[in-house]
Length: 140
Image (cartoon, rainbow, N blue to C red; front, top):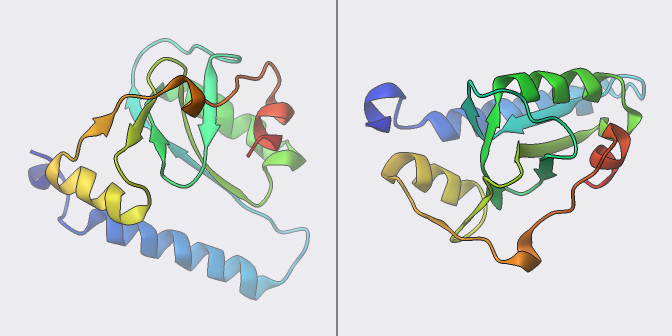
């Protein structure tokens, strides 16, 4: 079903876009010109849960679900936080976490192309929760 909704190479296209934007920032070479890439998990229309019920991670290792309202909240706070500057991170709701069987962009492409399976999280894999935005962004 995913193939019917998205082009087969959507993950390669997203990666190329991401790398292109990073290159623009490198070429600009302006210290006061920064970026933050917010990469939400599966979007829902559920009510927002807010902090401390949101988590972040990096490296395409962990995913989960998150409400659109929580993503908007994260983006607004990332705009005003120096701790979020120059970072790329995934975000998701506590309790929805799952881990890829292997890591990285290739796994992400396989997941979307073939319905690649998530594996249950172990307690040691869970990221800490934070009750303020700067602490959340500094944990990345």
